[in-house]
Image (tube, rainbow, N blue to C red; front, side, top):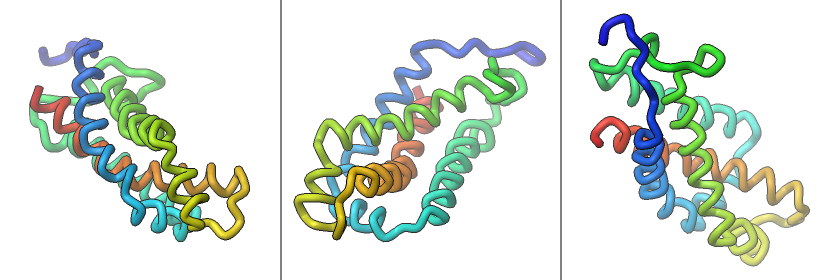
Length: 147
């Protein structure tokens, strides 16, 4: 397979989804994650997102000697497998958060936000999603590598 591009398949994404949802769930329904997200600055959130990207890239391409990003199908120069991993890692958390109504439950009903405007809830939800994605990316990348 040297020199050829590995075909990214639907089964690869399915494996990522299973792992991503599996590890995201417990963090979406944990009040501490929402309290932490409410106290984070935008700079903190950017650092957390960078950590998710680094963990994902490292898990896919540095921990697995058989996988080379230069031999994989790409989208805009980025390996499709990595794009899928990021979509699953962040997407699984946001889907679960909205399905469980976590933003309203934790941020509004528990009065974590003193002024729960729609923008404050949305911004804090994105920060909580980034925190949850740290764990989701581990599950998604592990499932992709093992299965």
